[in-house]
Length: 317
Image (cartoon, rainbow, N blue to C red; front, top):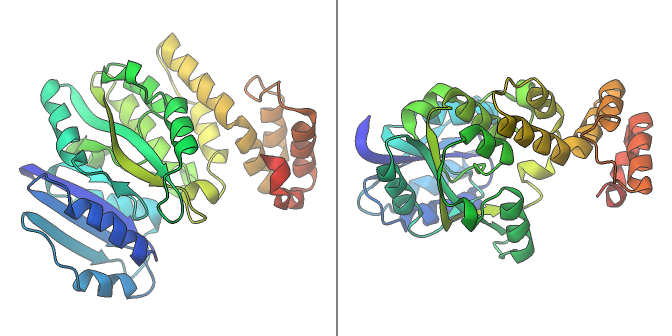
């Protein structure tokens, strides 16, 4: 491990044009020395050809691995983490973007306390073609408590993880810690492995601290290919959350808050997998919003009985 070196780990899959945007955002960072590691899970060679033609700025090392046998999302991330040579690393999804100065700003947070194991800032939300989405940005950060009042050292990392204040990527983290925690497979947490990583990171390091920087550091792209739009993001993580062993009233309250946020989506996910008993259990739990309008509640019941109705997405909202 090289002290002072920061590794940016970039898993990619069949999105060379978006990857190019992500890489450019790394090239314009002012932090040195910087290492960019790309793990390519694509079936074809388009990304490999793109990488071979890139000119890399001074002080930046670019390493590329093509996984000829697909590792899957979690396996690709874990492979990248294991190869990282930096003292600290950052995960950057191939469709997201770093803002100028982000790595330097986040790295400086570690000098503020020896207890800091990870630092993160505020996310901008962008659309399919990179257009800034003001309303989604406001909602995304407000719902995750990435607000000025929370600026600084976060002494209750479990609460922050359950709030989803810890972002899905664009964070800077102690590399040894990231390697130890790692990602869990789709079979365990579905498409919520980013959130699961943050929660387990916090649970295993209750005596350490996160640092929330009140500054925009990255852009999160919402597109038709985003994990959020692929479904099965709540079914398994809902069950994981229910089984957490928490130690304080603040942690329990944060867990209950998150269960309330994802209960409706978890009902739909269970119903689409034919797990009607689990869907109904959540619907009649304290976490399912009792203020849900009758049409939505009836639609959820209908999905439990007839999962094919889910294609009527306008009613799902």
